[in-house]
Image (cartoon, rainbow, N blue to C red; front, side, top):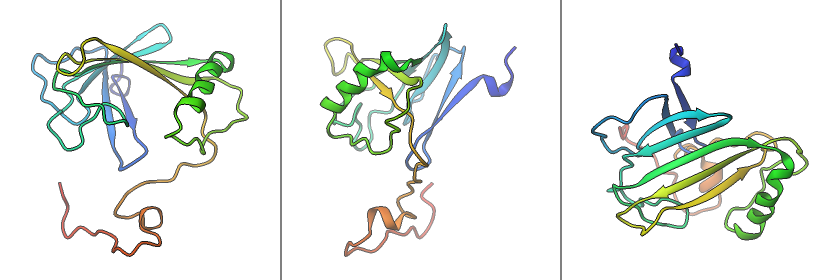
Length: 175
């Protein structure tokens, strides 16, 4: 049997100490309580990690499925497929990304790295918003150097430098 550490994967996100738990080799509960990242279960198909997510909370401010503001409903269902791809296989995706995604500046990638890349292909279904499923993919390159930590109320140099505004401060915890 799997040890406790091997029963889940935890995604730690770059900003605001956000994280998401993915239970491995598990089923979604019969009744899912909607949450910020939903209920995620995963399994491996060969060398590909497949993650199935439902129950993403839709009644929240700025609820969107992507950075372009695409809305979603409580019926949102996302399937992600993560795998490592070799350098040559990744080049078409990298070239397309540089051409099409001008909103995402690529200043943190190691452009000289010739090793494997992480690729995720995800499928989005949501009968409350879309007439058919759609999919997209992202191919990540290795980062160069350390990533900065982003915590808004503590990060005075990133968001408030040179502005005529006080740095926000909490009088008490917000949780």
